[in-house]
Amino acid sequence: MPGYLQLAPRGASHPFRRRLGLGAETKRRGDDNDLKLFVLSFTAFFICIYTLIF
Image (tube, rainbow, N blue to C red; front, side, top):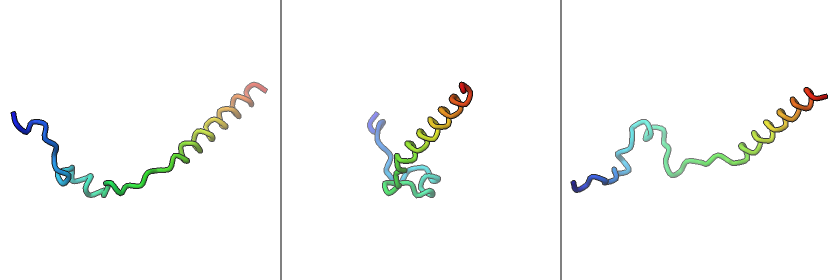
């Protein structure tokens, strides 16, 4: 079975992925958004619990 585990060439990817233009030049989302979401969720949870207790 020669060639059983050969990797496909880069141009043989799915047409939808080629159309989206996602490649090595994709911009990475900042991790700042994750931190902001965590702080917002934690604050909202704290306020809800605080108002239920007092």
